[in-house]
Length: 350
Image (tube, rainbow, N blue to C red; front, side, top):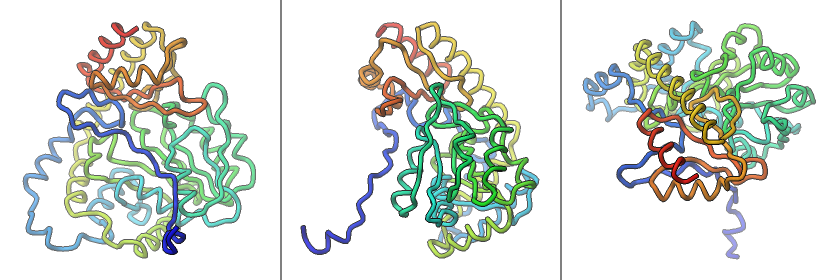
């Protein structure tokens, strides 16, 4: 080993879903929205003055933060904007999880949590989901340095009831509780209504899924002004200009079109329910889905082999080869046409 190699930080990185380049791909592996952004976004993109790109963007991201505050009925000082919810969450880990006590998050959950904890040297424990992949709120009553969990959960698609979410927050008022709501628009009940009651609660959401804007990387956090100030201070110490001008303008435009937003959510929910029934008819079992994906297993069928067979036919889903997840595939809900291609393949394969 060369002397300088001893000082390299070694981490086990997060593994993102594949981004295939082939034509005619059915891409059901990264939970993207199959429908395009709102026409209001397209109009704003056409009208955007590219001359402004020579200037740095607003460090406070005010045009988007103000639009979010209006959309959710919050104060401007309760909104934090970042480059996708991944950056928002990473900065939240760096800001709030500095105790020598372990933070808590589920053993089957968003795999970036353990990556950030390892990267920042944060001790952590991962209470196991029960046999039905449900989070047990009692596992979060112990002393800790913070709590984070997705609701609905990924990759299981199960949503925790709001009363259970509140119970976890109520039992952890000495630490910050982060509820990661990347998929909340597709099912479940948001914890936003609890912000006025709990000053230790941070709710994180994203434009990547329900608003069809994964390519612009827009995420945001909502919480008490004290939490937002602390998060902003860390951001300004890391990178003052995190959000580009285009994302700020187009993100604000997306919030103006509530009708289109609700229309596409309705399409995805309807397709999800039909897909769940079709999978059931083919012998698959899955937890009750609340997100824009289904976590499915078929007894007697090798999920890894099925994953590879699907990929050979240019149908991409996700397979997590863990002890409790190796028998499952995570299938993003696409258009009705895309899902029909999937079912045609499964009927022949099985």
